[in-house]
Amino acid sequence: MRDHIIGEYYELWDIVTDGPLATLKKNDLRKWEKNAEAKKWLIYGLSPDEYNRIQGCSTSKQIWDTLQVAHKGTPQVKRSRGTLLYSYYKSFAMKEGETIQEMYTKFITLTNKLKSLGRIIPEEERVEKILTKVLPITWDSKITAI
Image (cartoon, rainbow, N blue to C red; front, side):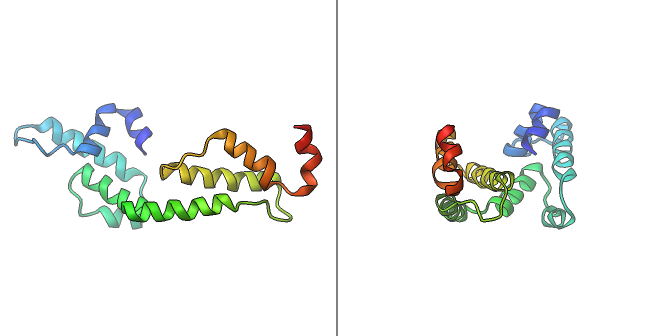
């Protein structure tokens, strides 16, 4: 969402994150227009349930703050979610009957979720984990060749 709004019009993102109405004067129509445009971009991608959640918001900043809390949670919830996801990462293994592509898709999804919570796993660590801990023993000869 952020990249889409910035790509359309960079100033809109400032309005979303800072709010346009803090210093708004009644005759400052431009800020009202930009707030309406930012709201429009935020609302475009919402499901009906999410729309119901933000329906009472009057500014793009209120919408954004509401969506952030709904999807990311409070800082305490984010920490707990990060800890839980990291424990999943530590114990991640390829399941029997699972293809490499399926395993890799799940692994990338997990590391992307960790990244979104601020816990970035360096590429070298991810590669080492896949080669030494995730792949089953039947892959040893291929790992050695790599």
